[in-house]
Image (cartoon, rainbow, N blue to C red; front, side):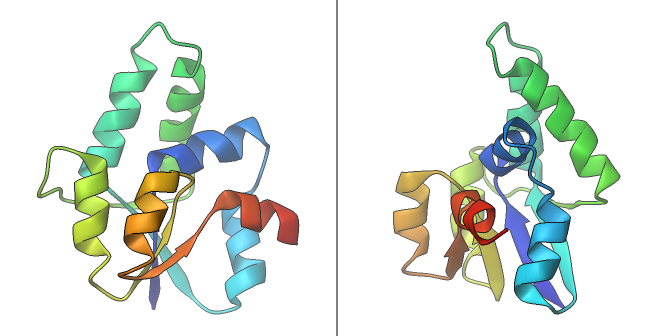
Length: 122
């Protein structure tokens, strides 16, 4: 089963833009898949949800969305989410992120998608 790794900005963007990630991915991939993220991504969202910044409400909603979608949380080996994602990209995994710098690094290692692409397809 294909693993789809979601970065924190994907959850936030999908809520802001009202994109159903799961349905969109089903339409695009048309094969079984498992949604995963890392502990570091969860910690990043938890930290954001407790901040006074404008995205804190989106971060809280993102954590709830992860539960609703039964996203599997992979143990982290690094403190920072980007490092974890780059390390996992060596496996057979599709990464979805909207982080431009991370996408550039990932293109050398794995298949990368952005939610902007998913939104345009739907």
